[in-house]
Image (cartoon, rainbow, N blue to C red):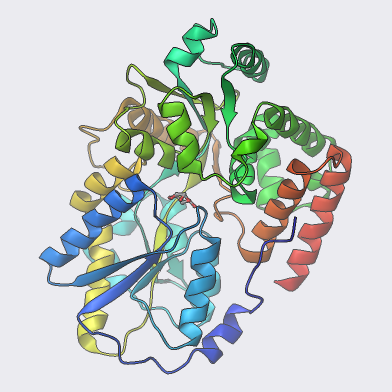
Length: 424
Ligand code: GAL
């Protein structure tokens, strides 16, 4: 497999290269994102409608590709052509890189109006600031470490309760296979493989090791017996995932589980939104959710946030601040997250009308925050960005789609990450 294509350009250089803005349609602001699944589009429509009510036209600029690699590339290309969007979906530590370009708008006024530093947990709020000023706003809080399952398929295979341990998961996968049903839906592309590996790594090494690897990028933790063990587990999952699902999207896989054509899917709770969209409520009679085995007390978090761009007239500047304010308002966050499958970033709003998996997500977030159990998702760009995230994803993709040994893959991963660090 070829390494993930990244636009090799430092953020600082990007700031200098950006062309003079073309005079855009001042009545409409483009909001770049990668939300093209049915549930995602429905959730985004909440933003479009609410902004319309505020007198601001939003263009929902959705660029296909789960994980957003394509969306990020297109964002840079557009900027170089002088096309300045209102906002773009950028997450985690990458927000700091964008801050360096000097292209971002200051939305302190929105943060003040919504009391972000009081209403949003510090783990999330801190990401939104560059050098003390707010330049981004969060819209949701996703949990990665979930296992989704179809109840009828499990019953058919003689499984009475969802797996709670790695051993049980493997036994259940074997039972489903024996019935001629797809045990695990997944493996569509590098990003999906990394997304599945995320909870496997946490389960294998625990939160402290997870941080050594994916936050501190410690070569010894990466090329370690724990990583080898985690990769062996990924190999075991791969063995229960049909090759024919390569190239399929995460939401296609969610459909397989929803319709009883597959037993399990390992995916963040954007799958929760998609199950709802398909008419099956997770936690209801057809589909269940359980914390990924061995990670019940932990919470791998993924926060979708948007950076805002400086505009060329006061009306648009004001519209951008309004956008930031709306994205973080209780009314918007309640409705948006209901469709998205996630929970609001605002911990003080009630989750009335949310499904049992979402209710559980908030409880687990609050418990994990007290217990050192919160970790930023590497696969969703929360702990690293660009070349470094790419180094992990490429290594996992290479391993998954070849006969590479776990030992060789762990060593190659450590090497790739070192190279990526030197490019930063
Ligand atoms: C993630 C994003 C989620 C979800 C997913 C699939 O990176 O954070 O909100 O939409 O991609 O598109």
